[in-house]
Image 1 (cartoon, rainbow over the protein chains, first blue to last red):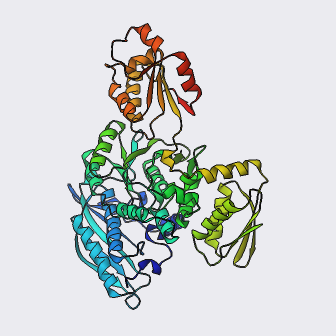
Image 2 (tube, chains in turn purple, brown):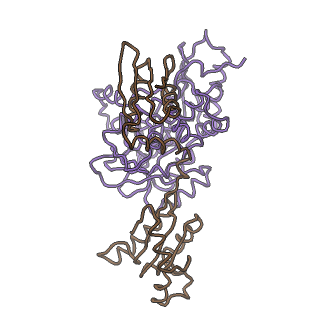
Image 3 (cartoon, rainbow over the protein chains, first blue to last red):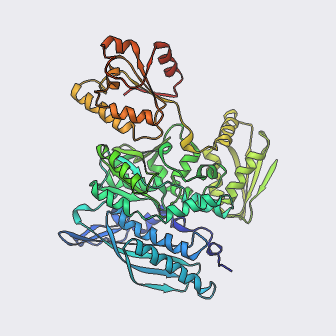
Length: 346
Length: 205
């Protein structure tokens, strides 16, 4: 009797983003506001906008929503909310308030599913200390859900794509592979354990990572979502004027991911991300093809990619492990700008 | 010729079917893939190109026929075999990386800087997964493996991660530091040569 939300969509989660190359073209000619209190806007490819209210308070503002990527409404709500709130954490902020954004075909899907999605959203918001104080729904097929979220940050402690410094090491807090696992699930190629592992990671808030980033004085970070590990690393490298090197051999992978890719289970979003990034990316000699494609796998509610001075890296890593991110690992580094912004090695 | 008909399937199914077809076909048997949507065609093309396979594409309206000719390029079949057998998790593909420490310092030019760099090298090395298979210390490098060395703790961490630590016995005797509780196993030239000879990569900081 349970309605399966996956029957409404062909792709889900952050895989359904508009191709990044196209998006850049569409946004290029939009006039940017000249308000001097805007501290971060779209021009640095950041996760959220930041607006200064006073000398010690700025607002972080973001939104994100997408079609279903799991079968059950409650799980979808939990994941969508985790993903929406993540952009606040990625900027080093503390989330406060949110609005629901819901598109739902009331004539085609049982209304209990609507309630289940919202229940998931509210439960995750509560866990994050966020109050949902309203929202907006329209009738639309397939369903889509997410939040618009406001958080706060000290104006001097904003963490951005442009805060990476040469010589820093990059730590990734969650394993990658959600896009591949979700695609594999549709093809009935994954085990229940693999599905469950991906779900668990997608529902994991990046709150602990955000607190630790502030404790260690981190200024450069992003969260890994639709553009994949490589796509977001590239945006960070360009935003910061450095060249980032990622060692794929060090990147934690969800179980089953490598095997799925070697069987050809590569979601279309990975090809779109590759297409976007390859002009400014150098692939190391001997980099395995499957690892290359995994680096472009679109993540839903992925981990934080944190840039940290080398002498602090070991302590931050240990604290991340202790805070419930046992897979967190050093996966690369930032160096002076070269002819390409991103190098992906084995 | 093996025919893979992906019509009616959407991404990533056509790619999975292509992969399966290539694996199942005899090594020199051509594989024909029929595709009915542009996205899948573009992804299959890219996949075949990146995997060094030779193919032709014929488009007729919405239907594309991709023919992969096989057994033409020698290295192609090699790639193929390697590709099919690489099903272990990437993190478990451990390359035999060996680090040769030949001096107390990293690089030459300024001794103080060189010392700082070597400390930084070990501090960073322990953060990188997978850990190196072995670290070989010889000449003045052996001093870094002693109890009073600034990288003593990091060498311990490497040992915990399964890295083999090999010290040149002749060098330890030469510097007369045998009683300084060195970490690692005492090695002769024969063993050191074999470690270096069997390495996939040798890094000399």
